Length: 453
Ligand code: PFF
Image (cartoon, rainbow, N blue to C red; front, side, top):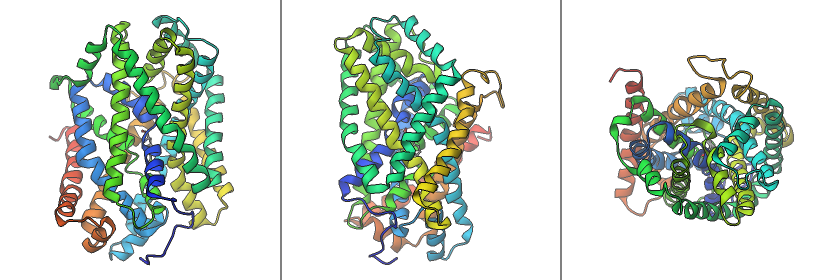
């Protein structure tokens, strides 16, 4: 690949800008909304350990692989796979991998926007003092009443989708970089504050115990799959989002270091969310396995009862909405870039169409919490089905293929050139992880779930 080539969509202004944007993509609802509730549903400590192992052994090497593929081709994921497969002398079927990613992006965004809409509504609720002095049952009633109303959910979902589209329309440098720089530190500070509150509650140690005490009897084959899926989801891997961001990465940036910083930040935020939420769960006699409403049923109790809680509540939900925005733009960018680069769409038109498709799909998730709550396929609501399909199947399958491509199909000298490690040992280690550990682990987890193991 010619060294001077740059993505048509522009380039990050610095290594820091890339780290910021990729961290923005990684840190989002996955860390603060999803990680705590699936940890609660899957029994706590042992699940967290499997999750951490997946981040370390599969997530980080794969993040490096995705980034290097993107940077080498400087194109959208579908085109990247075409170009790199050709360069490696492999078949053209690899571009289906790009398709799988684009499809996963739409599906995830469709429900992501609905949940981000909840967070947006909670900014307003916090502002009007809905949580002030509220008891756990009042907080729960607020949540239940809210999700029971399709009209309200549609309103907030539409607003969030519109905001996503507006940022993506402005393009990489203007839109993305600026929006992430401020809110990441703000979110981080607010999480620390919430952990501080959690420490003052009676259930603090019980919460920590739940989160970190290993009890393998609670670990089922399916929870291992969910933990692995969450590692992919939380790090934005397996669907080309990070590949896309890698395409905007200048040549002189260290992919390995950046990946470790991004994964580290992502993991810290998820753990902080857990440390803040579970003590509140146990202090108030709530259930850890109460599902997708968990964050919305716990944190308002903290805000309603802590000093300065009115202001912190508003700030927290605002930060959460922004964190969700910096993730949602990366969910849609691969599709948008593809429409522009391969189909000749203007950026505006590409955003409009992609947004519209995801918006319509989002209605399925909205209705899953009210009018279609009892409509189930494979014992799952529409939302649960889309979530399972994307996080537990599409992303791991995408990740498996990316690992195989980077480890086995791509020429060694090419991956070596992109990674540019100062020593050979690091390359050998990375190569071992993407060639053997990551694909074999994904494969074994799948076999385990279908009951072959
Ligand atoms: N990583 C995001 C989160 O944890 O909220 C969600 C996400 C963004 C998943 C982008 C996948 C993706 F490509």
